[in-house]
Length: 113
Ligand SMILES: [Zn+2]
Image 1 (tube, rainbow, N blue to C red):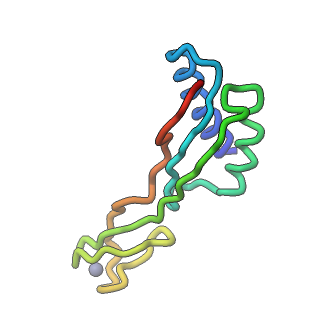
Image 2 (cartoon, rainbow, N blue to C red; image 1 turned 120 degrees about the horizontal axis):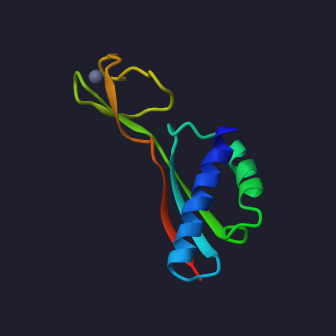
């Protein structure tokens, strides 16, 4: 499962931070996840529970910031909220658009103790 490998890489990163800071565990973790990052929310929740077991993240408070995807049309420069891949520009109906945001998949902050 794709989401489990995401969780496991977050666990790796968290363990590295804990080690670096001579801490014991993670108190809080904040994630930025874009709506176009290809992450299924339910699958991520499920993978999280399984993936953090017996790790420094097991009892961490998790906050997920869901970032709405936005795109810019390369023809008319119109900016719009995009809800699915290959959605045309609502102004001129061109398909040549670039993402401004929404593909994020990162740890925004992490508090260790
Ligand atoms: Zn356009």
